[in-house]
Image 1: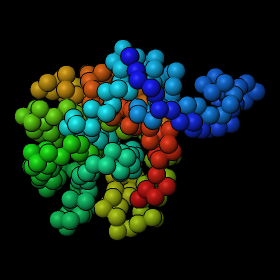
Image 2: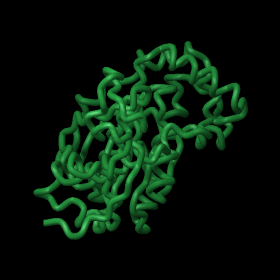
Image 3: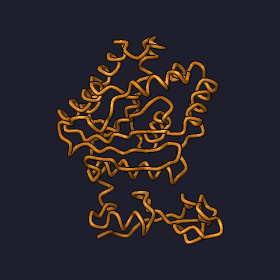
Image 4: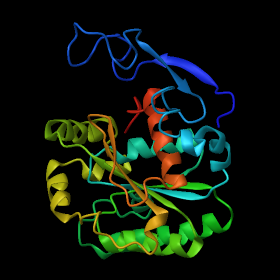
Length: 275
């Protein structure tokens, strides 16, 4: 059973503190009973009585949360340009106090700005990340976030192989934004904020359109050990989390899901300083 839960009161994430139902403004919000606030567990970020207790009562999740920090794991971002991957990766890396490896920054550092789909240099970037992972996890790094599209299956297979060798669990966060108006706004905003940003090379909507056709389906990937992999689908525009996972109940996948929910509850995402 749980020990003494450490709770805090926060603004209700469902009604944003208004206390009113989002579907019918004349009705009170069912999640907070019209108060505009909810209590969340400081350990797992779950809403007390809804997610924190009900969902994880058999696993004593809040008691185990302390041990999860000792588990090594990889968070692999996945999705097309302007899906919100980099902003989310930055927030998660900061919240979890872990390292973020960004494919765009590696290309930028090597002077490979503007390389197109099909260019062999893109393969070299993803191979170099595999080498970096071997070194970092070998030296005891606990959690690493990889920020990139990982559009091609053979790029992802390289990561799966390394993690299988090192016995590292993987949580893949598949980011989507299905609202094309929002995608266009993000792409325009990306260049306007910082033309010299490593991400500014993808500041044309045609790049996004090409990448949509170029990306290879994630759910048909073959994993060396499916029980070590969890997939979390996250709509970065509607702020909706869905598990479409092979092993959604894996300890590390649960840990990442809780961290994602926590940054949403705390209002850390979307970041006001995203570039």
